[in-house]
Amino acid sequence: MSEKTKTAVIANEKIDNAKLIKASKIILDLQQELKKYIAKGHGPFLAAIYDSKGNLIAKTANSVVNKSCSHNHAEMNAIKLAEKKLGTYDLSPYNLSIYVTSEPCMMCLGGIMWSGIKAVYYGVPSERVTKITGFDEGFKPDWFKEFKKRGITVYGQIETEAGEKVLKDYVAGGHTVYKPKR
Ligand SMILES: [Zn+2]
Image (tube, rainbow, N blue to C red; front, side, top):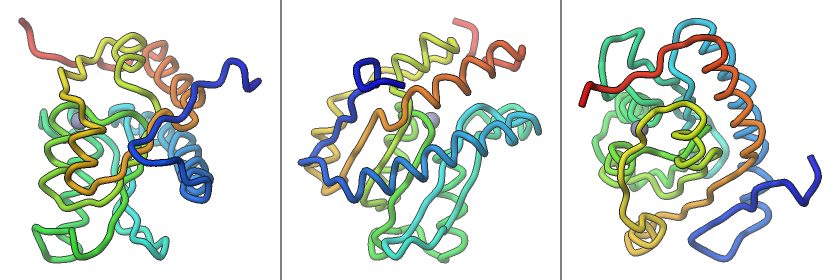
């Protein structure tokens, strides 16, 4: 992919290249791995939580359809697993980062805020997710700014093209795009 067509990374702090290189690698790996989760019946989103030393604390895919639970988004599942593992409802002392294949929806933004996670790195932006798949990602405040106020770093649109490809394949594969009737 040439630089010209590559979607620019956005952040709520001055972009730190070391953080971005690390996040790009993790998110590209997640996009690859996501295909295997989709093949097993999961929704097309994967999240991983790491501590500051690079230890993986939790990695989970969306399981709304296969577990019949509307809030089983990848991020919510990962937060639940991390809290269970660490035996706490407050992750803030652990200095954790969440990496996710697409931008968190309105529910997951709340979930991240309540969890005490310190940094968010995501792939495909919500408007592209909605456009490609038809999932309704919800309405959001200026969350980059709101998270900054709360000491949460955000980097977005990381390796977007790779993520979009997985989402397009999900739709082309005839997998479920779910939303309640309105
Ligand atoms: Zn969500």
